[in-house]
Length: 340
Ligand SMILES: Nc1ncnc2c1ncn2[C@@H]1O[C@H](COP(=O)(O)OP(=O)(O)OP(=O)(O)O)[C@@H](O)[C@H]1O
Image (cartoon, protein in one colour):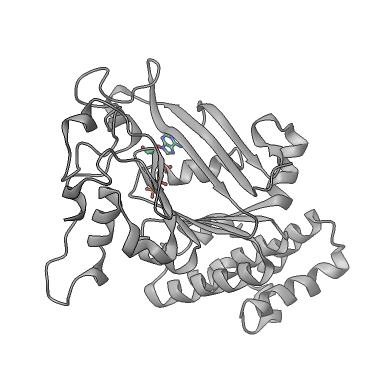
């Protein structure tokens, strides 16, 4: 019996893709898949304990969404995968259709970036929540009362009126609360939240993150929180996993982020945050452009952009090893150059 809530072991994924999407640079140096396929996940491994919140952070294209979707086996067409995903003791890869339905409707809930893409625009909010609840075996008669209670708990006002409204009548922030209410209503062990506030304005973002955080703590629900914002993830998560080009380069406790970030990419992300410099000072960006797995080197994935790169980074892939309270994949960690 595993004590992990989620365990991903060496998850690899290749997607069919036109040549134009594949790497430039010398053949064999980049992470190409078989002919006509490109590598998008290059061996992702991570673990989550029950009730834990893990932040999965990285730039666009690094593979955060595909990692989260793999937990529900929601894969793009033509995806080839290897490695395993376990939710508690369930091997997600070996589930039949019924098992997959149960996983998606009871064990694991997903909250996406854009609530308007999640909620059917022609149905009322009450219908949407009622459907979710009836899938849990709640009777039609009880569904409305349960839906009202959940909406009230997450701070939605004028609930009876809301239940009769359509998505277009609600603001983006309010609608995302409804989506979170639906996720909580399934009483899942794990919520996958994929950039849940990116489509919202800043004030609403804070409210929605606060609600997600408060509710998942109260209910001891595990949270995989995907974000490109390291500080935001650190504010709501117990640990942070930093992803670059289809692989995890560093995992560390959220409350030790500033003191213990060792990977040059994590350090660059920290420097690239608006709050990291005095007002008026120039904000640093991570040098170079974001890379997906298929256009990053097959050795150290960050070698092309790393300010401290050395020869070994271009010849050998670094091992993922425990350093301090975290784990990191970098040849240079421990070397004076990085910490000077
Ligand atoms: N359905 C798909 N079809 C083809 N390629 C895809 C698909 N989904 C993702 N990709 C590619 O896989 C790589 C990883 O994408 P993914 O969406 O997981 O990244 P991400 O880190 O979540 O980025 P973002 O923050 O932009 O969503 C990217 O190169 C992306 O273009």
